[in-house]
Amino acid sequence: MRARRHLSIVGAGLAGPLLAILLARRGFAVTLYERRGDPRNSTPEAGRSINLALAARGMRTLEHAGLMQRVRPLLITMRGRMVHELGRPACLLPYGQREEEVIYSVGRAALNHLLIEEAARHSGVTLRFDHSCGGADLARDALLLRDLRANRAYEVPLAPTIATDGAGSPVRISLADQGATRASEELLDHDYKELTLPAIDGRHALDANALHIWPRRGFMLIALPNTDGSFTATLFLPRAGPASFASLGSERSVRELFAREFPDVMPLMPGLLEEFRTHPQGHLGTVHAQPWHVGGRALLLGDAAHAIVPFHGQGMNAAFEDCLELDALLETHASWEALFAAFEAQRRPSTAAIAQMAIENYEEMRERVLDPRFLRQKSWALELERRFPERFIPRYSMVMFHPEISYAEALRRGTVQQEILDELEARAGGSQTLDAERARELVAMRL
Image 1 (cartoon, helix red, strand yellow):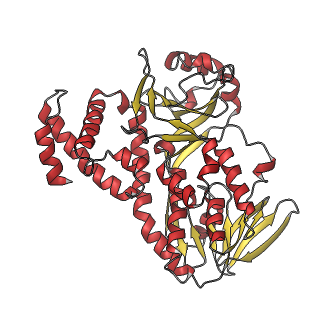
Image 2: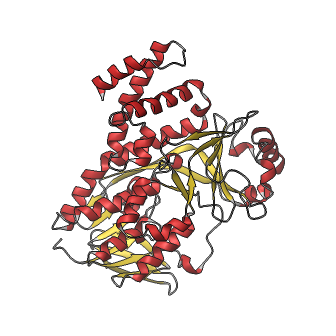
């Protein structure tokens, strides 16, 4: 890369500081701007974390940055989904069939703190907290900033700027306002509210090594473990309708919903009513933007370019993979314009694929895990993977455990594999027995 060696990054959430670390290691001077105060000196806002699921793609980037050893103490292993069906014992659905096929729960605030701390260790990284971004002014080639402590507006040269400023990206909004990109947000008709299952005598109240799901077809509750013995629970409900956030206007209605739908977990949530009243109701959506870059002047990355709903646990992992692939492309591109164009061309098919799969996974989590046909096909998929490990890998496993397989390829192969399972299902006529010979023929022909 022979281009200008200084650049700006807007947004110090997760992707921003990680990208700053990678670029600083290559000798770039990076100024990282963040609207919030320094999170190392503050308490995270309650009710907005949605615990993160770290999987192989994100871990590969952290390994590349030399950070995994520091991150590991923040992680709790989750070996599968613990499904809490009404009136039945909880049942674990493993994520994979190998010991290493697990994912990890990690608190957003703790991981953000670590990444910012590591970025600050690099002499090539300058951190500017309490600095809001008003967007990019393309006519003046300027990045518009405000020092919130001094209440002073100023600007710096735009080229090059990488925006990692999240789903509500001011940089993306300003580029769209100037006609440099087309952007939209496709909102889900379900919202979320974060709740807590506190530790009991310092221990987890439920199995600590699982992602807990209470699927109720039209909605669901999930809970991810924390290192302090608590769980972060998230209720996903439609905004309107009989069982919805709109229907929960009183403490009585909240209590009745939980007593009816989540009777096993309600006694473990002593702060339910207070948290439900005070925690914000968050929105969920998919961001679409095209293009992601304006020449070599500005690039959208991570959620700023392609935010997705959280139901596949891949938002952070996809953003980290963005960082890794941009870093790799620096080896072969001599200008920011060529780099940004190559990055978008390489990443767009995969980010579109994971956006689609994330929405599909919501239906799976809240409904299909209760369907005997789904469970039968899942067991068959694992059997086919054991028989044909080089050819048949369940789509979930490709996404979570095989970073060498792109999201786009996982979607393509997953579609073919689902067609095979559907054909075997039709041939079985309701039987639980897999037709191994026909399965072998289909795998040989189509995969």
